[in-house]
Length: 109
Ligand SMILES: CC(=O)Nc1ccn([C@H]2C[C@H](O)[C@@H](CO)O2)c(=O)n1
Image 1 (tube, rainbow, N blue to C red):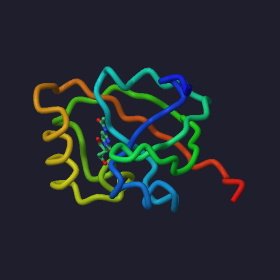
Image 2 (cartoon, protein in one colour):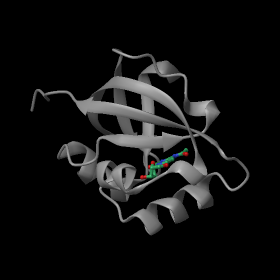
Image 3 (cartoon, helix red, strand yellow):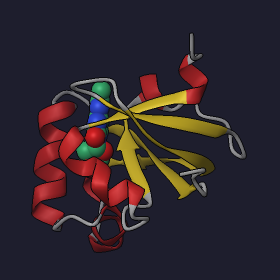
Image 4 (cartoon, rainbow, N blue to C red):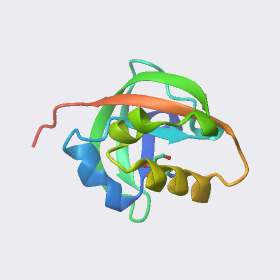
């Protein structure tokens, strides 16, 4: 069993961006802000729980929804309006979010 501190899920359609190193942040709510800087975390698809890759947590920083900007969108590899729409769909009732910055770990395969 993998501990919650060492597992993160992403929508399947986003996982190629993580695996290619193009997407280097994710914005989550407080319930997913527990990742420790320097820890290695396994990435799984949300829909099918398939392992995608491993990442290392670089930082976890609080942010308000209204302060999400173009730089975050670039790091998410998404257009800013799409990113904000997605975040509002996932977390409709909170303004208190966390930017989790990570780097892709080299894979064995
Ligand atoms: C369970 C859950 O919340 N899963 C999530 C949350 C967010 N994402 C993605 C969508 C955006 O690219 C960023 C910002 O939230 O993170 C996700 O893939 N899975």
